[in-house]
Length: 141
Image (tube, rainbow, N blue to C red; front, side):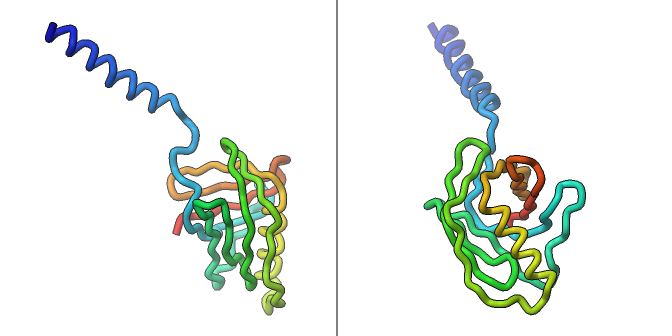
């Protein structure tokens, strides 16, 4: 009886380990605060402006907020597997004194208007447009 109980317990534990290993997907959470690393075309990413403290916050409640240039932004998002879609993203309308910062903000916020796929690899979040033409790379803060 003890051998049979030990056998079933061992099989139960192994099945749990195998199910966990096969579940795949993104085990890391999208929620939290991220810093902009780079953005643009996958073949020639532009590094984020070094003198701008950027942040993109994905809330557990489905809200997104942050700053990727000189304006704050906010909106909502929905996740379905490795796909993410955004509702209307609104932002403040201050004029960016630095053209590069303004270009960065425009490019990133424009990309957030379309459905994206995402991959979390350690502390790196990569958002890619459906057609593959735009990428946003973020690092967990």
